[in-house]
Image 1: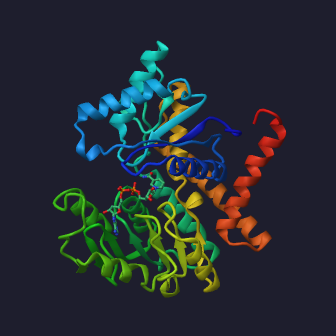
Image 2: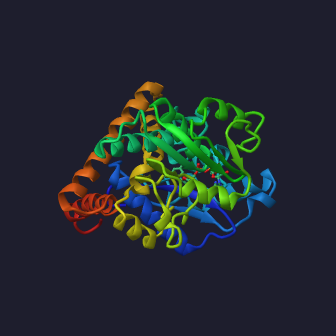
Length: 360
Ligand code: NAD
């Protein structure tokens, strides 16, 4: 909490453990520091299985949890957000319970709220927009023309689909996509606006059934083909641990941009580095989401709503600055970008801790 209130999501999942929550909170400390939003790290979790609970039960659980933690959260203390199995409705119940306890409306206690309750414009696509900015930065650095760059993306949910949308607009050719239903491959480039329309309509959230390109329905083969395809940019945007000791030698992308959290294992990291593949780490590449969450909180404190263009511009400025900070440490200190991102983050946290002294 040295640099500001704690920030991080609340997770509802049967597998939540205290160790996992602590590790995720620490990751948030470094992510907030690297993109330079004035927050420390935090995380919350409840061991439960929301897929087997009614809305009424989820609401009761959320309200009871909020009441219990109300003395440790707050706009100046700790600002939760959605994570696995929590959403804008859950955030609304937290605002309501917390505000009732305080005796005044306090939307700044969480981010990821519905727009009507003080949520921010631009949040939905923020992480993908940030990933696209990171791709643009690394391609420039590697002297690869974005207009001719080929891209493969694993995951076509919130982050993967928004990343595809922005990269397509920037001129990239997306030649492979996978999601939980399989993979689509097209050397000529997948028509991104069309597949986005398909997924949000007839596809019911999945790419399966999209008629153009080559569809691979076996998920393991689709992911193997995607991860090992010869593209300029590989973007894991689904799950953790996807690039590991057993497949890292087969990665042929020139650049890996980590949109998901933790998609590359430490063993794979070393192999990619040995093979000259540049990797933009998760704490930098996917920090667009927490940046717009920060904007949501600032808007709540100002009791003001920013225009979407303002949000997009501020996000682009902060992401570019963070990218440049990390890249320059990487070049200057001759370390990979993951190490550089941690160096930037540790330095920021350490400086504040040193300046503050005792209570930090
Ligand atoms: P999501 O649930 O919206 O999307 C996940 C996607 O992955 C879906 O398309 C799903 O079909 C696909 N998928 C699931 N299993 C798969 C498999 N075996 N192979 C290929 N695809 C598979 O989730 P999201 O919000 O897009 O998050 C994706 C990743 O990004 C996670 O690691 C998350 O922690 C990270 N992240 C998300 C945000 C955010 O703002 N949403 C911010 C930072 C980091």
